[in-house]
Length: 269
Image 1 (cartoon, rainbow, N blue to C red):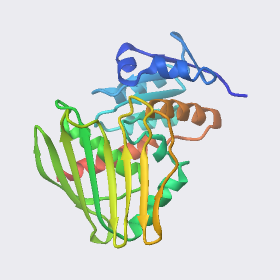
Image 2: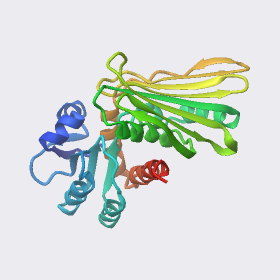
Image 3: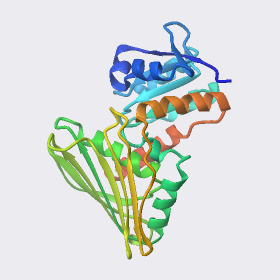
């Protein structure tokens, strides 16, 4: 039997993560509450680590953070660990259900392509006015979620329209990351791994609707398109916090976010 958890979001968190709609769409798992909620939604603007830690100290068993900006999560990780609370980061693209740990086929396609990679190319598109470094953090989060380890990162260029970052994979395979701020294209993140005989492509759509990710692999044996999964990143994140609290398993989100922060710090070295 599924345990129904109470959930609360302040207006800023509601705007960032469409919490009311998500909670209403998961009526077996959640119910709205204003006092002593099991799970609290926190908006990811500056100071989110402190707000999340305060929610846990106030008794929340779980916290969902929508679109977190770059901040050191070390103190929050300590608070969550002490309280045995779960912190889930509701990421723009990295939260897509196609990249969930349970999506073994997708991670298998990526891992197989990385064995024979000759180039990794990734493009992230967002609306004009988006903070380029926030967009880059979201792009790094996708790479981390895909199990891709980039190193020797360097900012080639950055302006009001986006950025270009270069780096390498293990063995010196080149990495090219582009961030583009435009209203001419939908908010999308792509990861393409070119190999000596084919390629693997992951296309992650805007999470505001349950548009599916597109995952394709081309090898010497032929082309494969993985099954389509219709689910929004927001619902995936809330389903995950419920599953983690029900099972008692820890979340890895803050550890992965620390890796993202490490990648960003490479650009400042």
